[in-house]
Length: 153
Image 1 (cartoon, rainbow, N blue to C red):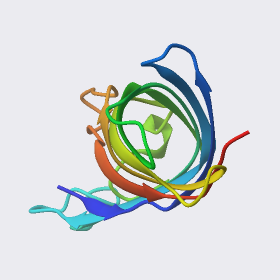
Image 2: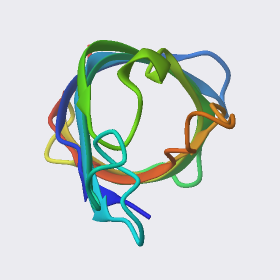
Image 3: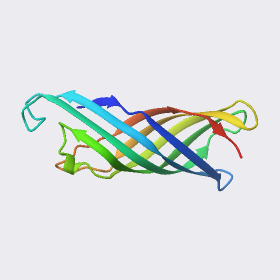
Image 4: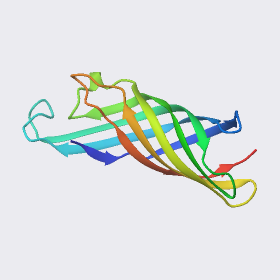
């Protein structure tokens, strides 16, 4: 089991499609940096128990957002998918040739805290369920907490 930290920088656009559904598109950069200690010498060509992986991704997400409340603060939930294209990678835990495009299902819950009629602070909690499962690449599912700045046009 490996754990870690994955900072990122994203830009999102939302389009109100129906009264109850908003389409959200997100593009950004994220870094996955994970590590752990193996029980046996199974990392770094089976010469170490110190297992690490650092992958920099260009990430695109598409989601459907459902507003739970409407008012000065909007609570919402969303579901969608993400494609993550590695732009650089290094690892002692994984074979680098096995690190390729990652696909995830994204579940998200959030709050838009409105400062005024135009500006707001979006806060969300996300779970990314990995669809990349094979004998050579372990599942890398992740939880995320995001905060940002938003403007309505």
